[in-house]
Image (cartoon, rainbow, N blue to C red; front, side, top):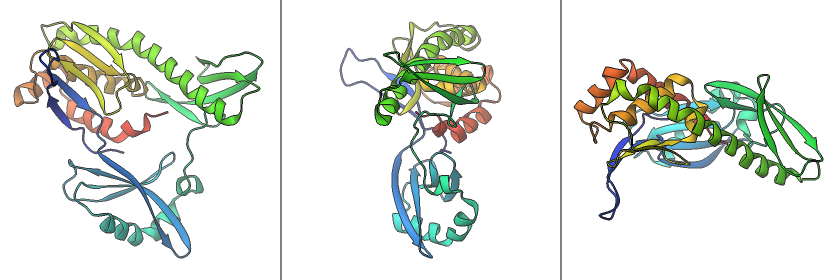
Length: 271
């Protein structure tokens, strides 16, 4: 659903801030817009990327609705003209949910991703004071107090689910880093930190610290491996030169395919 990941490097602003190389979550300029076609409104999300050079693309996503991907310099009028041109196709193919996407409510019938699997949610109201989240029998079981309003239940469920993912990330990701470390770099990371990174999947600092986004636990294991290998390779090469990519390719000969796959599914990993 997203353009190719942007691989950037940057430096901190002070002497005590280490240089950091980041694996970015590939989303740049995102905004909402709409058109009218034969008396029907089509709302859509525009995602403009510097990585996309020429083509515009329309996709229909069951959770986020109509999405238009475009180069960064494409004007909103050019994008609207494309949506007008494809409006008949959009209205023919799109379900009501796609035309009127709804935010997650964390209730029965919705799903969450975990290790690449799309797992249904099962909810239960109880007299307990807090919200619990457990993955059992191929379902996310969410219990919540019966006296919460719908909005309160949604927000508290979101927070509880994020805590569950963070715990899983803290359990799984350091183990995956340890499994790959010797295959990628002679250097060991100084530490592996789990972070709530909004714009990147991971980063590696010059002090040897690796930071990984907890959301990557939603991805299939092959994509988690790609992110981990990418950051471990920075322990040897702190840039994105050809030498760096050879380091990645030595460990993961198919890294390009994995990167493309992460591109395609990355925007599904949200709460």
